[in-house]
Image (cartoon, rainbow, N blue to C red; front, side, top):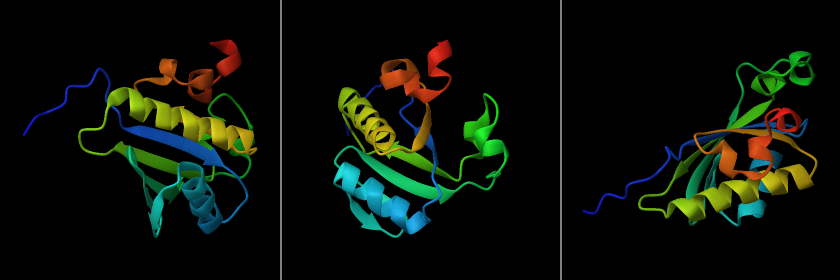
Amino acid sequence: MLLVEYQYDLFTKIFLDTDLEKTSVVETVSLMVKGSTAGSRIVTEQAEIFIFNNGDFDEERRNRGSDEFLYYKYYLDIEPIEDVEETLYIKEISKILTKLWDSGYKAVASCDFEEELPRKGGYNFEER
């Protein structure tokens, strides 16, 4: 078995805020990435995406302060599929973020390669 060496740890967490129900979020993300869905899990050619309710969700704090994203309603845990090409995976994460933003969602990525992403992943973009 050939082990692929990556420049980055590819695990990605995207904090996502919307007032939509979780089922709508799963459906929307699935359509964005053209993935197959099973419950709250979406599989694409590059990644496995799991959508969770954020246990730290806070109605007031989700709109306040530089760490507001920690209190968004949902988060996506995204793992690369086995032997994925790193550049393709990073492009997929970039596409997900851009489509979420273009659709009006608040989204912030947390990963080792934020500098490679559009708006540097979305966290305090104006200040970075």
